[in-house]
Amino acid sequence: MAGGSLMNYKVTYPSHEMDSKPTIKFFEFEYEALDWSHEEVQRRIDFTVQHRSDTVSEEEYKQIEEYEYYLVKVERVSNNG
Image (cartoon, rainbow, N blue to C red; front, top):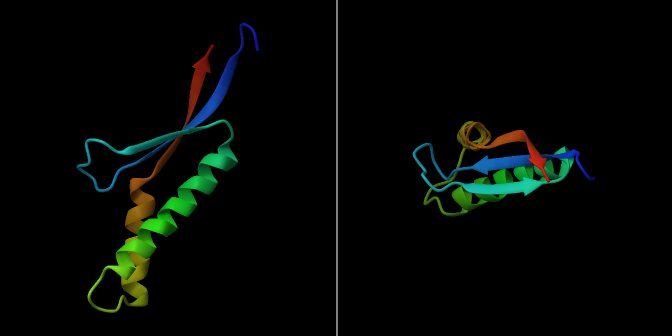
């Protein structure tokens, strides 16, 4: 695309709110960014649940899930090239 701009999608996903080095990924299409985000949220939830010493209730699971989705940010970025 000579002279045009290609829209890409950037996903920023910190480990916690104060994470100064979050995971950052770029995708060509929005669906790719969203798919990766959902898969990574699920992976992090599974990791948290598996490494807990006690059983996670349904309410706790929902809270973990809400927090993970709160952390992840998908945005459209312009890649002028």
